[in-house]
Image (cartoon, rainbow, N blue to C red):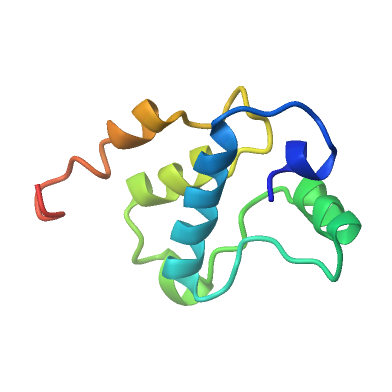
Length: 100
């Protein structure tokens, strides 16, 4: 869940983009970007995170555009988080060899 949902704040469609980022991160790394035994601990872990915990086994192989995509989707500030349009137009998804 996004920080704004965990804090019972107003939210918009960008919460769905957070979910896309969390799924992308887990597909790449094999584990979720944030965890906690309960929602309070999960929120604390999200807020205290200074960088995404990419697996060092794969990080060197990830394209910088893929890393940026994860960072923009998992931005704790919804103002900075990608919208669907920004996500769908991102250069990583528009690269040749990705089914385009």
